[in-house]
Image: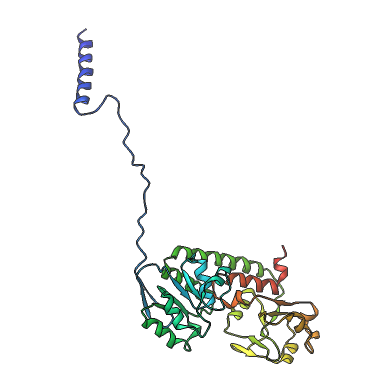
Length: 320
């Protein structure tokens, strides 16, 4: 009986002690903070970048108003999602379609007064427009408007860097990274298909019509594309060169790629040139026209340009 009394007293004391300490007889699970964690992102601005001519430009905030002076710049800016911010574009900007609705600021000979009157927070110029436009750009700088001169990209890698740089300048870093990732994926897809081609073809790339036929040689963007897909350029000279029709006939290319659209029915016109009926490309109906903007404009559509050139030369690799 004494033992049962002692057990009862012990139980009462236990309850008393728990109550005194603010507890209960039932143990509670530790509380977990279920509030969603918010990732703190360091602001991208202000940011200082060095442009293609070595000038440092400090951008205080993401620009709300932008003028683009080159079609390739415009395509990049639209792809970055800056359609609303773009207030002025080059006269020749035609892609995307929204670019046609923007205020025009001139072509290679741009309208300084027009640009200054728009009062943009930043102007994206282009290295290829120098030095002819340097005086005008300085006038824009003197008006207190930041000018960022974009590098004239000569390769895919330089194009990727250009897109990433413009992304930083506009606060669109993540979007720029996605564009580059998607481009690289498309390039890899094209190269995987052309790598399976066993018979490498010889190619003549025409960038200007007769009588002064011009083509692309070593050190050009088109040469890089041909090298990437394993095609052989019949031209061995450096840069952009004038070529005699007889030399084209003598080289006998497997494919002729026409990279312009200013001449109506150019494919039939090429086929009818004197002596061209003996060329393999003509005999096998391998004279193909490709949209020059896909390869001339070093922007987001460049990977698509690679694919179009590859399809023109190796259609069999894309037949599946």
